Each structure stands twice: as structure tokens, then as C-alpha cells.
Length: 342
Ligand code: FAD
Image 1 (cartoon, protein in one colour):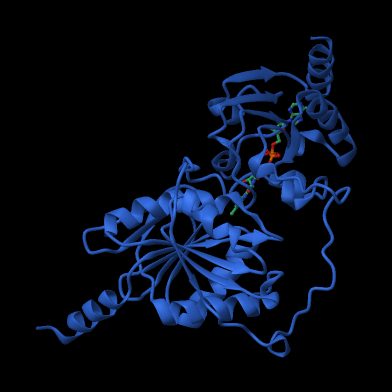
Image 2 (tube, protein in one colour; image 1 turned 90 degrees about the horizontal axis):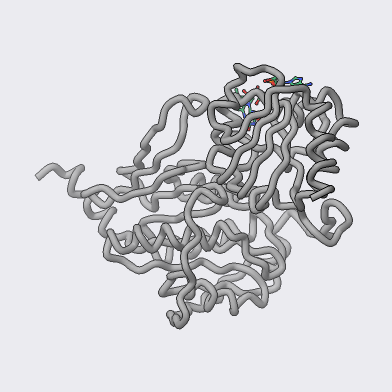
């Protein structure tokens, strides 16, 4: 027998189970974690293993039962003051301790600020592979996780496998996977892990958390039902006032193309597309956006797309359900006026 193959088979057999990292801030869970439990359930069933939620924080035990409602049957709980706010070092040590103790074969995290940071740190420390921003996940007949993601600016889809290392790690952006239906009744096993990290070992202290905007609400463009987006055709930051007026009538949030964000007209958290957010609103209004592939990949799953562009050949019209060929400086105020009169 090939000794290399035998060693690999032994390594793979030592790792079992699918884990989803439950991302939370002050007890509020990022929805992508539930979406990943939905996908994780499917993968765990194919592998014939348990689906576990990894809950790290302070006073977060109730999140374990929520995770059971979304399909987990086990939760690893690390609950201590040192985990109250996310910090790379403390969460990294916690994750690595869990991996060493319980050896999962798959770990999924949201491709959020936190998830990207943590997944990269963990994969480096445990010396395994990580595929970022996956859009599809499946299991092959050798128990490998097939991780599909766009490559070369969305022009091809690449399927990546990490067949020689365990665990297999992937991040997935919010809204890419379907939100699972919560179960009415669900129970699971909570594994309380006492591992903590000494404060002195962590170089970062969180002194204060400042929120965007008026401090009461974070704008989550990824979860918005209605979005009005502007691109380079807006010509300047002051003209976004037109979109804000339209958005106010529709109860929408204002998004932007990368060109508009790079120009400094809108903050980065409003960017839609490959290097911004993936959105799935009921209505997406694109104003002065040409429809580059990197923009389209972030919004083409919207239920209804309305495009306003003065160039009738703009590629945005290929994905739009309704297109208005015209000058947005005339069309947008007119649209706002008409909606106001409804
Ligand atoms: P343009 O392409 O310049 O289009 C402006 C449009 O406005 C034109 O179609 C024009 O006809 C129209 N217009 C102008 N004036 C008016 C008017 N008065 N009335 C009506 N229409 C008007 N882009 C993203 O958006 N998101 C991303 O996440 C992203 N990631 C990227 C990642 C990589 C690796 C790369 C290489 C690129 C990425 N891009 C991304 C950039 C992308 O390729 C495009 O450059 C960008 O989307 C173009 O933005 P735009 O449509 O606003 O500008």
C-alpha cells in the first residue's frame, strides 16, 4: 500500500463534523451565520456527520438554542468576558483550541469583516487551506469539500479543493446561501469549553464601539429590500441627494458602484459588487451605472432591476427588467415626483 495515501486516509479519518462559526456582536448574530447553518446541514447530511455551531462571546449561551433551531445539533460554547468584543487574538486562540480538541473536517464562516479576519488567521495557524468568498459548496465522493467561487473577475467559476489538509475552510458572503426555515422545536447538545485567553496576551483593547450614522442603526445594504444605487454617471457627491430623495420615497437605502465609491462620493460599505456587497433586494434601481461584470455579480439576483442610463447599449440593460434610456438628472427627479403623488 502507498504509505502516503495511507497517511492521508488516516489524517482525514481523524477529522469529523461540519462547523459553522456563529458571528455575533453584543449578542446579535450576523444573518450569514444562519445561512451557513442551512448549507452546513446539507453538507453534514452528505458526510453523515454532526453539524455544530461554534459560539464564542460573553453571555451568549442563548445563541446555542437559536443555532439548534437553524439546524445545528451540537454547539461548542466558549463564554467568558475576554470574548465580549471580537479581537483577532482571543478568537484565534479559541478557535485553534477547539480545532485541536475536536477536529472538524469542515469550517464555514461568513465573508464579513470579522469572518475574513478570523478565517485567514485560523487557516494560517493550523496550516490548512482556505477558500474565500465561495458561491457554491458541495461534497465529492472522497469526502472533500468542493468550494466554488468566481475567478478572474467573474469570468470563470473555479472549484477548489483542499484534499491533503484538514480542516477544510471556506468563507461565504452574506445572502449567497438561502436562509433556512427555522425549526419549531429543536434541541442539541451544548459542549461548554472552559478555555480562555489571558487579557495580557492580547495586544488589542476595545475602549469604545462607535457606530456609523446617527449611532442607532447600522445600514446593512446587504439585507436591504429596496436599493437605489448610483454610479459614475452621478457626476459628483452632491448629486446623490437626488437618489436619497428617491430612496426616501421608496423606503430604500442608497448604494453605489465602485467608481462612485473610489471617487469618494459614497462610503465603502455602500459598494455593490465583487469587491463590495452582494445584495438580493426586491427592487434594485441602477442610476448612471454601466453594468460592468464586477457590478452585476453583486446585484443580478435582485427580484426586479430598473436601470436608468443615457446609453442605450449599456450592459446594465441586459440584466434589467425595466430600462429607461435617458438623462438621470431628468428621470430621477421625475420618478420621485410621480411616486410622491401616488
Ligand atoms: P461607468 O462604467 O463609467 O458607467 C457610468 C455610466 O453612467 C455609463 O453607462 C453612462 O452611460 C452613464 N451615464 C453618464 N451620465 C449619465 C446621465 N446623465 N444619465 C444617465 N446615465 C448616465 N465595480 C463595482 O461596481 N463593484 C465592485 O465590487 C467592483 N469590483 C471590481 C473588482 C475588480 C477586480 C475590478 C477589476 C473591477 C471592479 N469593479 C467593481 C469596477 C467595474 O469594473 C467598473 O469599473 C465599475 O463598476 C464602473 O462603475 P460605473 O458603472 O459607476 O461607471
